[in-house]
Length: 384
Ligand SMILES: Cc1cc2nc3c(=O)[nH]c(=O)nc-3n(C[C@H](O)[C@H](O)[C@H](O)COP(=O)(O)OP(=O)(O)OC[C@H]3O[C@@H](n4cnc5c(N)ncnc54)[C@H](O)[C@@H]3O)c2cc1C
Image (cartoon, rainbow, N blue to C red; front, side, top):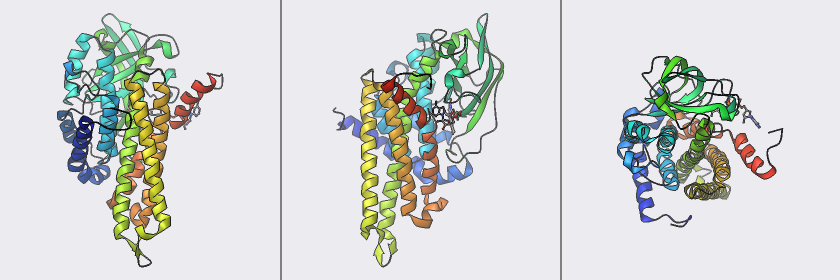
C-alpha cells in the first residue's frame, strides 16, 4: 500500500471495526458513561475478533497486523466510544510489550490469553510523584532469591482492579532511567491491591485506580528483558500507544462531525436549516479539513513505526499532539454547532468532548510531546 490509499484488506479491517463499534459500542456509550460501567463482556468480544493483540505475532494468538492497521481499528472503535476504544488500545500496548520483550516462555505463558482478551492488561508507569518525569519513579523491586519484592504506588492506572495482568515499571537499580526494570504482575499476587475508582471528567466507561504494591513477591521469571532496560521497554510501548490514542481522538472527532452534519440538516433557525448558513458550512469544512490533515499525518507516523524508521519516536510524538489537539477542538466545535442540545448528555456530544480531553494529557502530555520534538531539534539542554 502507499501511505495514502488503503488496500482491500485494510478497508475490510476498518469496516469490521466500524460495524462492531456501531453495533456493540455506540448504542450503549452514553449509559456506560453515566453508570461508570466498564463493559468487559463487550471488550472480550473485540478480543474474539482479533482486536486484543493487533500488532502481536501470530504464533501466540496475535493478529500480526501493522501499526497502520491498528490506527484504522482504533479510529473505527472510537466512533462508537472513545473510552472503550482507548482501554483496548492500552491493553494492546501492554500485550505487545510482553510479545516484543518477553522470552519464549513468557510469550507462551501470557500472550495467548491476552490476545484473545480472556485476560485484560494494564500499563503501570505513572506514580503520584512521577508523571511527566516518569524516569523519577520510586516503586522498588528488590531481588530476593527467585523473586523480586515490589513496594510502591502507581497512579492513574487504566483498567486497574479489573485487569488480570499488570505490566509494571519498577526500580531495581540507581536513580534515573537506567535503574528501571519491567515486570509482569498477575492480579492474584499477594501484596497487590487497588485504590478507589477515581471520579473523572470523562473516560467513565473504564476504571482508573491506584495500583499498590506492599511486600509483593513477584517471580524473577516475570521480569521482561534484562534488569535496567525497563524504561526503554516503557517508551517503546508508548510510541505505538501514542498513535493509538491519537487514532481514538480521530474517531471521536469523526463521530462528532458526522452527528453535527446530520443534526444541522434537520435543525432550523431563522427559517432555514443550519446547513444553509455559510458561516456554519465553513466551520464544517474546516473541521473536515483539520481531521483529514491529522489523520494523514498519523498514518505517516504509523508507517514510520512499521518501517522502524529512526525518526519514528519523533513522528509519533508529533502525530499524537496534532491528532489529540485537533480531535478535541473538532469535538468542541461540534458541541457548539449543536447549540444548547450539545450540552445535554442525551445527545452524546458532550461525552465525546469530555472523553477526548484526557487524550491531550495521558501517554505523555502534549507539552511532553513538544519536549520530545524540541529535543530532536535543539538537543537536550539543562532546561529540559
Ligand atoms: C484518566 C487517566 C488515565 C491514565 N492512565 C494511565 C495508565 O494506564 N498508566 C499510566 O502509567 N499512566 C496513566 N495515566 C497518567 C498520565 O500518563 C499522566 O497523568 C501524565 O503523564 C502526566 O503526568 P502528571 O499527571 O503527573 O502531570 P505532571 O507531570 O505533574 O505535569 C503537570 C503539568 O506540567 C507540564 N509539564 C511537566 N513537565 C514539563 C516540562 N518539562 N516542560 C513543559 N511542561 C511540563 C505537564 O505537561 C502538565 O501540563 C493516566 C492519566 C489519566 C488522567
